[in-house]
Image 1 (cartoon, one colour):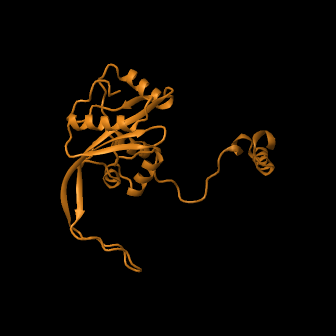
Image 2 (cartoon, rainbow, N blue to C red; image 1 turned 180 degrees about the vertical axis):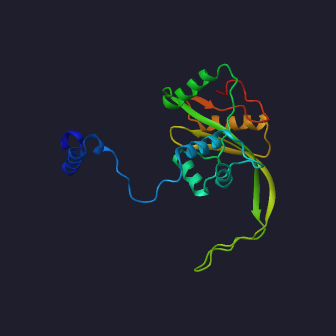
Image 3 (cartoon, rainbow, N blue to C red; image 1 turned 90 degrees about the vertical axis):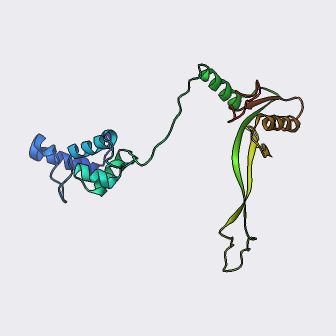
Length: 223
């Protein structure tokens, strides 16, 4: 019996003794030691429902303290309920709906290029970062010494802004990038020309990029 049920022989002997002594009534759970439970299933269900459905009062986010006041439980109890049910009211994520009727087809093309690129082809993931602040400290950095950390001045000097265009080789991890003072179609074309110089001859190049902000991507450059 122990082998069939996956328990020890002592456990089988204990439950057989309880059955012989009290028949079916002997198989019920006996009262356990310790303090009786003070939070009911209904209170737990109500705190979960309020977390999911009720809007916070005079606040932008829910907190364990405010929820505890609304459902009549302690703050620590609400925290344990949230952890047990995987609730994280303090977090929020954004999403953007896609209206492109060819979105699914484009996803198939992009994923196919990344997972199974053609022979003699180079897949590049292109993106851009605009308005990068070029900052420098107002005083030279004092180097680290024994017992003294590196020290920098609290203020800095602005040296304008720059734009970074970069392409990631998905196969090797190599990044080809260039910095430009402005963020226009002309600068993006210069970046594409630099890519053409960097890429070995004889390879079919497949750049994957979106429509960069404030500029038009040349025909055929986007996926």
